[in-house]
Image 1 (cartoon, one colour):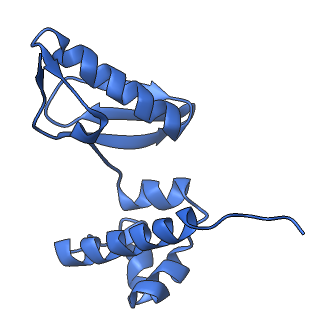
Image 2 (cartoon, rainbow, N blue to C red; image 1 turned 90 degrees about the vertical axis):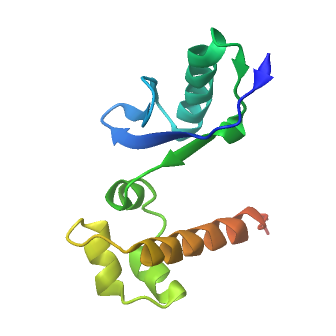
Length: 131
């Protein structure tokens, strides 16, 4: 069995019962009650899809995408005003992206994503204690 070399892009969406994801270039669909469950189910769905081709998928082969509005709706803990100030962007402009009134350029999208990743890295390095 050979290892998969390509990336499978899956679009993540919030639903009334949890989350769903579909592959952009393949007929692969899955759901989950939580994001963690969805990620596991997506890996299983991709693995099953390529099983007959004797191709082994790894978790690194799956790339998830989510639109701005859905991201900020689900991750409400990330305040768009805070993020805008953090990355040096006008908060009103980021708000327009989040609400779908404007579409960010590739460079703006990358700047926003870099800010989100930086916050995530910071949070992952913190331990909570109780005094």
